[in-house]
Length: 427
Image 1 (cartoon, rainbow, N blue to C red):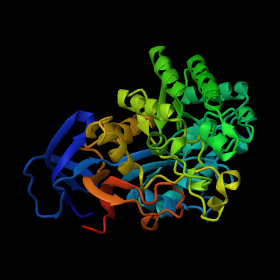
Image 2 (cartoon, rainbow, N blue to C red; image 1 turned 90 degrees about the vertical axis):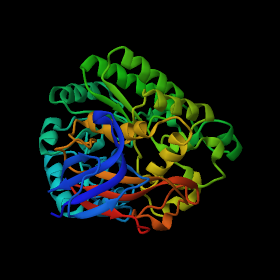
Image 3 (tube, rainbow, N blue to C red; image 1 turned 135 degrees about the vertical axis):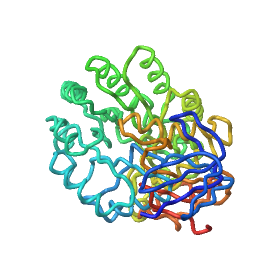
Image 4 (cartoon, rainbow, N blue to C red; image 1 turned 180 degrees about the horizontal axis):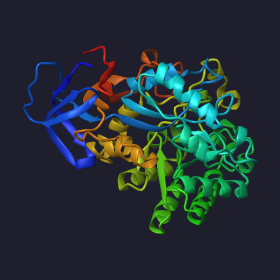
């Protein structure tokens, strides 16, 4: 493997609280030296004016493979992730068939080695077939390579079954990644319940749909000792509940997606399926409190919930389009534009929430630029301004309301295990 020297970048390394302009030397896929004025005869990347950060980590993506490859594949999803600065992503198990056994995890792990340019760590389902009735072999899936369990796309509505799963997850140190949705309260809702749903004549989804299951899951985690991670939080009360749970000693973490801190239901321009996601875009008050929660570190992770669909599927408006938005190729720029530039996060805070903290949630030795660690690195130009263009996406999915949005922040290079897996065409 060719040695690589990154020169003159702003090195942001939360693991050692480092923020300085300097160089990083990579050899045999590892970071072997870090400092100023490093010189070596090898390939050189001039990172002047750019952030040099640990590779981004996304705890919440949907790769649709196996079974729905017309939406996305392992390969296209991994390439989209590399384009977005991610070196590790965690796909949810709601594929066809559901990823619910150690054997299916092992099959995925083998395919990932052959088909993916970055690290892909599969998540196993909580129950067999995601039917909510019988708990899977959680320990076996962990041993096969799963990084967590989730029933994402729905909640396990039987609290007794979920408690059994949480106990087993706690026993083997497996994080439980919760999609909080009381299906009995949805009642045909397709967007946030409020003035906009009334204006468009559409059924609304109330905050209680999320909040009731969030507090249930927190209480079960408290009782069982499970490590709980709340996915795609969208309500003001989710921030309050997570804050109180942490004070109470519950092992809980929480994520917010860029679409939920960038848009609210007031921004929906009409009956456009690209604005349909689950949880839905909430009120402006919810959005503002989510941003404050990210700023305060209560919500310590930013994830995408990358959920690709075909253009045909998304063309039907709110009533007939599936829920979901792609996010791998817009997440870093939206975080830079909406949170860093507006003072909610420092550049170091961005790295913490997009790399360092996600690594801690699933207990992997990544999210760091320490010497001796694997060279998973993103080089990011925070000042590059452009309009998001879905035609440049590596993902098969183009379903986003952000097409044409002006943003700041462009991924210049993504390096995984010392190998350049994405290079911006402007270089």
